[in-house]
Image 1 (cartoon, rainbow, N blue to C red):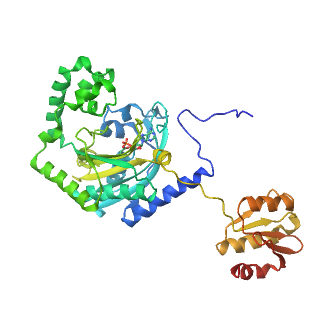
Image 2: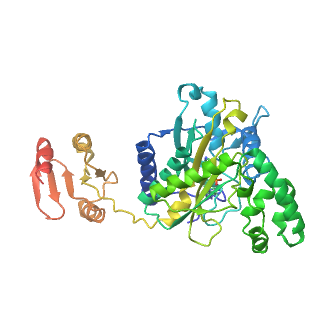
Image 3: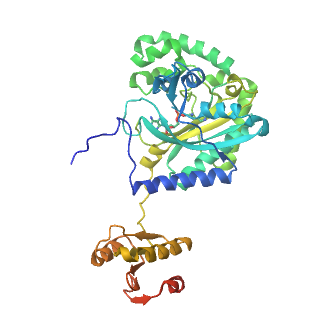
Length: 409
Ligand code: HAM
């Protein structure tokens, strides 16, 4: 049978039992972030278009791919394509920065980008991420990388590469941009079409290009590290030293510039070893000027976000069985209130039950209970019986004996 309605292109339903995988990832993120005393932040799904255009950059792919519309009052609204700008907005708007000069936040949320859908690239996708405000110190860069690695490790994703770079401050970057522009202009005719388009407005993005014809030109391009100030070099080296101390492997990648305008200093990405162009699991870096630019006090910051769908594609997690403790059969409405009392009591005492509200006949209910790994089936009628589904032993029981009986099993 064909449904009258289909989901919107680039979006997906997540159905059981796959939802279990999501719950597992989400609880891992909550646990690990909270172990590091990062606190959860939630922000609205919609924001003003301006928030993103001005702060992630008008010319970035992310900005161009936003879902945008005008509301009834003529205000331009967008579904959020990423979380850093909304978190900074909330951090300033709520006055949180006053109470929490060193502030460590995390999130799990859905984001929307009108990209060309393909494996690992969706129009609605989910990220978890962290943002730490209030310090320039290299320990903060290292701590968030450790969190990312720790979450991936707990999810059994070990075959990854951590690429890391330092892209300097805005002065270093504008010097570098003009150097790159000159260099790429000299090779313009051999660059891919996309890179030729990027040449004028954002030559650094050419370094990110995956196009074959660009690769040798990129390999010989000038490197930003030759323009870094002494302070920036020292910061970068001490981040690397912390990673060495933590035993976290990395590759210095002088071409890792990231696609959003707010970055400065440290940038990093965790990728899988697959050759796919959607191999970035996680990306982040410093954005020391964003809070000030958005109207807050001078507040350095660093963060990352990871794509949950891409993590799921990488993880080989087995789906667990349903594992019900007690299957409830109560097929006669006359005894429903007795049934509900028993259910209520079992739930209050921590048991996982499945109530067959469909009221199949008992033979089918037993089959169903076995299929779902239930340990017991309780049949509620004029009398009550309980059957151990592995030993097949069954006995009649009174309502107030049930808990004691279960505890002795
Ligand atoms: P981003 O690199 O745009 O960074 O996204 C982070 C991760 O989200 C990517 O590495 C990827 O795993 C996932 N992702 C992005 N777009 C899609 C998509 N269309 N479909 C599936 N997964 C996707 C940011 O969003 C920054 N806000 C990260 C950050 C936080 N930087 C500092 N703090």
